[in-house]
Amino acid sequence: MTAPISAADLAVVGDQLGRPPRGARAVVFRCPAGHPGVVETSPRLSDGTPFPTLYYLTCPHAVTAVSTLESSGIMREMTDRLAVDDELAAAYRRAHESYLARRYELGDVPEIHGISAGGMPKRVKCLHVLVAHALAAGPGVNPFGDEAIEAIADRWPGPDCA
Image 1 (tube, rainbow, N blue to C red):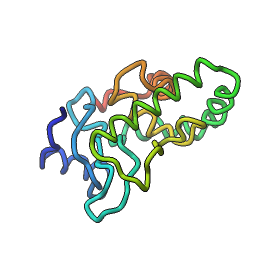
Image 2: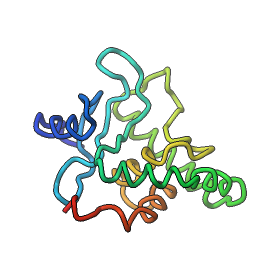
Image 3: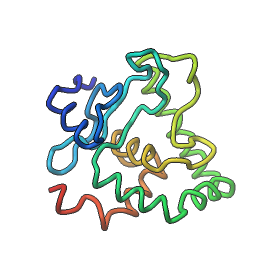
Image 4: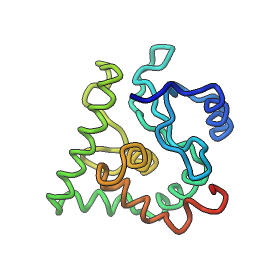
């Protein structure tokens, strides 16, 4: 069970995002300096809007590193690998199921039932979500999140995070 997000952490996340966070309910990963790095969000926002993004990457240094990685075109390569690597595709489907299982623990929202995020389980659409999931769940849960974290290891966490 994760503890509710504190007012202090909400303020830090707001500063990181440059806007008030939506639906943040818990910090599920902290950077080496102890700042929020990934927040878990409610599956339905306070205004009633369904919100499929369960894990939201907030660490600005990680966001920048992942954005740079996304701009390299790696997501198409990752998606193409799903068609030829049955083991990878099965692991990615398990990541999708893990994501949904946690979100269902927080509440089933019929409008987004069966929909995870980041393109799971058929394609790779958003590495930010996949990295957030991998950081929140730990290594071995989201294969593409793990790969992306490894790919940005030379840029994140960096000296600004320590």
